[in-house]
Amino acid sequence: RLAASVAASQTPQFTRNIALYTAELADDLARSGRPDEAADAGLRVLALLGEVQSSRIQAMLATTARLLLPHRSDAGVSEFLEGHAVLSRTA
Image (cartoon, rainbow, N blue to C red):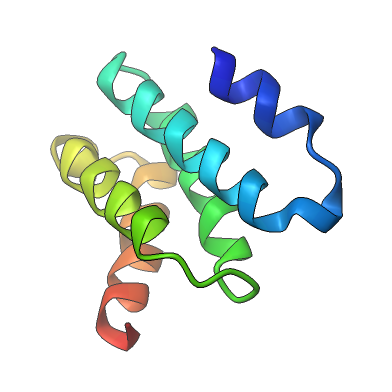
């Protein structure tokens, strides 16, 4: 929950921090059995990665994607997994 509050409190000029804390949130949510919320957070991070280059954030998203694979039939999760796959191919 700390990651959620920190991510929400960041102003737009701190895009890297927003991406980092939101990636942590996605991981936390995936590990807590909340795949739809994790996928939503992951999609927000994917949207920021055009502005942020971070191997740490990309590694966190890869972990989240692995955790969400069993839920790939959920619409939000499949959208995140597809977006992450595109990122992985272009990285």
